[in-house]
Image (tube, helix red, strand yellow):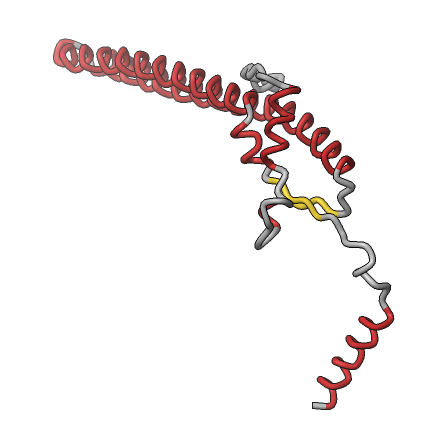
Length: 185
């Protein structure tokens, strides 16, 4: 009981001694960067390009997989006519092609993701500049990510304004797959 009263007295003393916040209200702004990017023209352009690139990889993969299946089917038909060692060699050859296809798909997918991340960094850089401008114009004392705030009124959320400014500064961004650098052998 004594400890609680002591804590309460310390808190009360701190409140009384602290400078008055009533004389100058703090300006707090919140923003949702992910939402701003997703709604912006550049973000939509980026998403469309990523989907197109991924779709092409899927299509190419399906074609290559179909070709491998056809080769496997032909091999099954010929297996009775082949010597065991020749059959084993053809099976290993097909397995190697399958492995190479999987590795190729993995590399292409990683290249697309890396390109998307690079493009996103360009958008984020512009967004940060615009957010800085917004905070200066509104004389903000604190700017927080929306995810860090339990509740924020609509007047404190500058996400829509950020989207408008992003659209003015950056209409689209080019997504170029970035191939991974291969190590020296």
